[in-house]
Length: 256
Image (cartoon, rainbow, N blue to C red; front, side, top):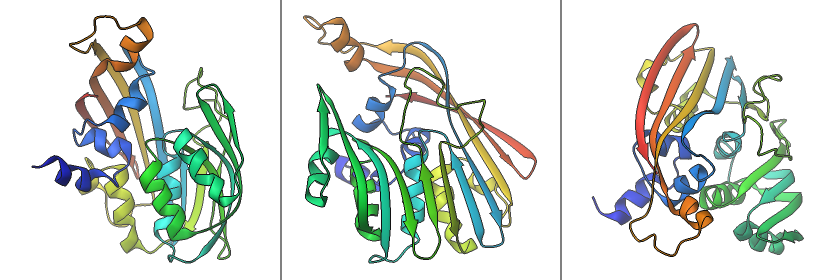
């Protein structure tokens, strides 16, 4: 399989779906540089379906999937009122064209967002930049759909916010059952055959076990910080799916 074909195959997959599928790319590496050797709680995603009404609740790490899924169900030219914060240099430069004013502190770039997008346009921005930028955006539509995302991160605490439940990002949309497939492909590609067609509630949890930091071969002259950033993480992700009261487990090794 050529590198180009592999890129085209996985470019629109959520980062956790890529991890489960055994992909190792620069986007995944950037997400894991904060981890040393140890066991770490990963994000959770809860999906509740009542008729055509769906509520998605995610910890930090699933906010991009929730927003992308909502946008993928909308027509290309449907207008969205968008507010919040985007972090990352590539998006800070991009959003200047929309009226955003980047705030720069050292290597940190932040843009406050409070303007309209066409749904297709914003969806493509998510698809292109989700590995390079952090989108903490709330989205409102004329049809009444909405995604609400927090705009503040505390990198020193558990991403889960155990005391509050799963609520860093919450999306409320109306969806036909047939369209759920694209969400399941992104959220649970390893469990998709186990989910009944008419499920009502689903919760996926992730736990990262980093067993080893693998230093680059040419590490002479690297500072401690450079060595940490360039080292790969070898380990496994432990995943648990609870769907309508039934529980399933999976474990997948990674090297990112």
